[in-house]
Amino acid sequence: MSWLGEQIHLALSRKPGTPDYSGRANRYTLSNALDFARQTIPDFLELIRGKTILDYGCGPGWQAVAMYQQGARQVVGIDIDDRWLSHGRTLAQQESIQQGVHFCRQVPEEFLGKFDLVISLSSFEHFRDPGSELTAMRAAVAPGGRVVISFAEPWLSHNGSHMGFFTRLPWVNVFFSENTIMRVRSRFRDDGATRLEDVTGGLNKMTLAKFARLIEQSGMALANLKFYPTRGLPVVARIPLLREFLVSSAACTLRKHKSGASAGQHLDSSIESVPAQVMLPTSSCFQGREAG
Image (cartoon, rainbow, N blue to C red; front, side, top):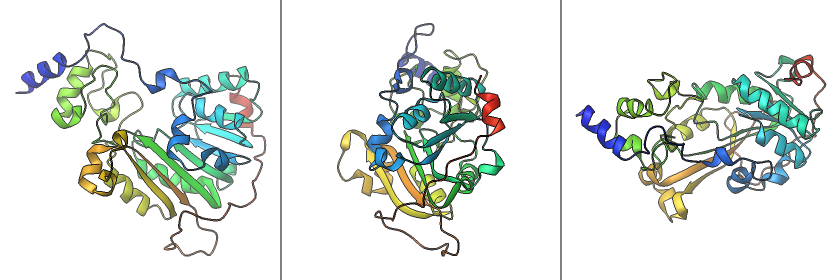
């Protein structure tokens, strides 16, 4: 049966050796890098203006550089992929803004609790241990500051497998086992990955229910949580089972409690402005990495 499933999956995929199908990440420019954030995060451009921002899981740096160009006071991008960090530094240098945008593998300890805003864009579904990463985001943001998370294609959505580079079949991970998917994937990638969590960038099977549980356990106040149905389908976002399959993206805004605030406090969507922004000092970590 597994052999048959593999053959069916292959028949519904592009021919091995042909170019990858293109996706959103393949078409990033500085002019469109923030489109997804603007579509899923309310008043996004107003939110980032004048803020010191941590771009958590920054990837190749397109969003970090674009946020600075759109008025952020200072942006730090962190990621575990040195190639992406190097790309981000090069991009910042090309735009002559390396004084305001920095890239590191991790946040220097002296900056923890200093950021006005921590943003995770299109990365939360890739973290190996998302609960730990959310805890780290909370540690990085200043008391009263915000953590904003927005990601596309939850696990059970039509492209939740993130295998769109070789197949157009929706809900691949619903129709086929992980083993079958990975065997077919090996025809298009030679990285030796046998599990989804081992592919480049990783994949943690983030369902909407899991996302909601992690938010609830974060120790931060929920300002808003939004689900965006595929093609704007009505009603489905309100029905838990349906939205797992028919919601294409999710976003939330969390707020870190100020000192002395109750951990059980919840906020509505009209929360007050965050505290005055703090300009991050120059760090040897940033100076040593900007040259790439």
